[in-house]
Image (cartoon, rainbow, N blue to C red):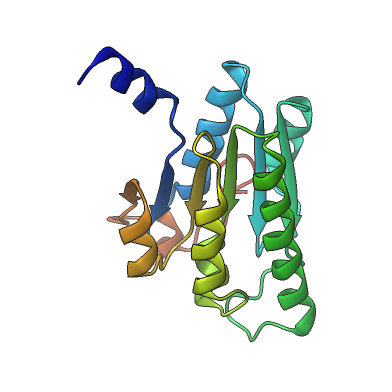
Length: 181
């Protein structure tokens, strides 16, 4: 690799996917956002499905304006059928992410739980794949959530699968503030 091509590879924005049934996908994306903010990069963190209060929201507020977080969900409905308001929230999220991509004001855009939004049919795969094609070469995109479809895995530059081997949730331990929520 020449010095020029190495520099181009380092400056290029890639598409990363964090998927699988294990814990840590959102946490990994938050860690990347924290690292990016420490390097002076601007991050837009879009949370699909989520509309509840999570501890990371408090931390992110302290890192503004380097990290901006917006939620495009209302409540947890993953065991129920989504309502029209859930569809509207996801649609709004896709449009705002598209606007952020086109504005080029963010170095990294995280689409947290976008794979769940796809799985729950809140958005269409074609719309997401079209959105990926709109990104500028410098913008890094990170997509999280279980059930990443094969077409997305194929399009991504980096795919990490979190695999659950053992989880204390199976023993009845609820989500703990500051650890899982």
